[in-house]
Image (cartoon, rainbow, N blue to C red; front, top):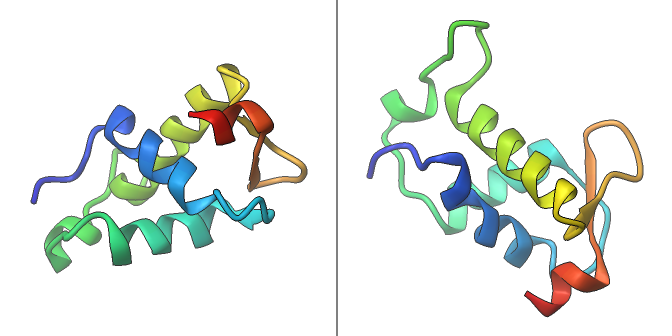
Length: 89
């Protein structure tokens, strides 16, 4: 499976956060890898030009757009929580 585009991570991010708990973005990313995306070791270790992990970068962008849409909130640095609007989606 190729590394998902940021928009392909958005619905799975919301599903991971349905329990309404505050989670770190790294924790969400790990759950996505375990339950939603079957990536090879090579894909899991792929980096973007800044040196960041490509999959984590895509999840970060997915989070950014979900936050702008009012579906997620960021209670702390690198933390996310679903909003009531996010639960409706």
